[in-house]
Each structure stands twice: as C-alpha cells, then as structure tokens.
Amino acid sequence: MSLRAQIKAWRKTEQTIAIVPTMGNLHAGHLSLIKKAQTLADKVVVSIFVNPLQFDDQQDLHKYPRTLAADSEKLMQAGCDLLFTPDTALMYPQSIALQSVVHVPGMDDKLCGAQRPGHFDGVATVVTKLFNMVQPDLAVFGEKDYQQLLLVRKLVSDLNLPVKIVGAPTIREASDLAMSSRNQHLTATEKQQAAQLYASLQWLKQQLEAGEYDVNALLKQTRSQLTSSGFTVDYVAICRAEDLQAANPPEDKNLRLLAAGRLGSVRLIDNIGCSLA
Ligand code: PAF
Image (cartoon, rainbow, N blue to C red; front, side, top):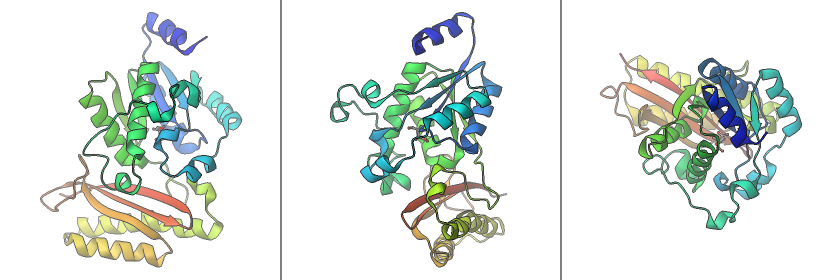
C-alpha cells in the first residue's frame, strides 16, 4: 500500500499518527523515540532518509552509515507501523539546487548553525516535506539535538503546521556518552575521552546551581577541561532554554548548557538542562 493510501485508511478509522523522522543507522536513542511515539499515537511512522540538503560537508554525507536491512529488522521488533524510505529523487525531484528552502530565522545562526552553514535550512526543509507527506498529528524529536528540537518547534509555530512536537530525553551509554551514530567512528581511546563531554556539562551545572554565575570564567574552565581531555572545542554555551539566547544567570533561571567538539574527525554534541532556584 502506498504511503498516502495507508495514511488515508488510518484516518478513516480515526487513528492518530506519529512520525519519528530519522536518517537511519538506528540505535537505542531512536528506539526510545519510537517507544514514546507509541504511547502518544495509535500508529507510528518512521522515516529514514539521509538528507543531502543538511550536510555542509560532502564527505560527512558519503561517510554516513546506511544500514537499511538492520534498521528494518529493529523497526519490526519495535512494532513500527510503517517505514517510509524516500530516496533523493522523490524528496528533491527538481534537483537540490532548484529546491525551495524553509529558513527559520533566529535559531539557525548560532551554536551548531554557526558551525554548519545551511545545515538547519536543510533540516527545516526536509522536516516540512515529511510533515506534508505523512500528515502526522505529532512528531517526536530527541533532546540530544536540542537546537534542532527548538528549530522544529518554531517552524511549526511560524508556519501554522498542525503537528504537535514532542521532545524526548537523551539516551546515554554506560559512560554517559550521548548515543549517536557518530560514536561508532570513535577509537577505544576516543570513546573514553568522549565521556568528558557530559562530565564537563555536569560540572558546569553544579557550579551554576552552587551560585557561581561568572559566565565567562565558567565557560573558559569548561573549555579547558574539554581541551585537556583531547577535544577540539567548537562551542560551550550557557543559554536560555526557551530560545537559546546567551543566558544571564541568575536572572535567567531556566537554562540549557550545550557543548560541541571534535575528537579526531568525529564531531560530538551534547546538552543538559539546568534550573536555578
Ligand atoms: O535528527 C536527524 O536525524 C535529522 O536531522 C532529521 C530530523 C531526521 C532530519 O533529516
């Protein structure tokens, strides 16, 4: 049955539909998003599409692991109701150069957006297309990509898309390293070093919660912890959780602490929440 026909049949029987958009190479983090979607909707659609529009680095695009057979198996076991695997010709029939693009201002020019030009336009565009194709009631996105989650929330609000956006907590390995398909590119030594990303964010949170509000000093110390552990730091930031503007604690109380850095050629990101009393 085609995607449209299946969606129509579900709608006819008044079943609610969730989508979990992915780029495949599924791990426990993705499976937790699917589990969450299953608690919120009658039917869960998972999309797998390695979206060329969101890769600023062509090497990264080519290197991206494509593991459809293993992914399908995992999705069957997870009870996914429909797997949607469009190809580039279906998503961008007119060529990528001629594709209309969705731009979400204010959310794409900082943090990962500043490091990866065009990345968030690519995400916003593909997510809009997936929403239009699948017409879900809700969509689940991981907090691991916190900036992406806020971007999608702003996108649906700005464009009045009738899709509820649900965030789901980051799933971590035993070392507390956030699950990511990039982790498999780390050597054994780098994997040990990688655990420092979360440890440094936790340290930062403890300092803030203990009443240390000298943002510049805190950021400097966090960066130096990461550098000492082998990271080339892209950014460390203390932001307002609601819009990712630079925070001014303790006036701003609802914070998100974010960091990104490279170990060898592997770029890792992580973030945690922090609420000041
Ligand atoms: O988070 C991802 O895997 C991707 O950015 C997404 C949301 C599937 C869009 O391609």
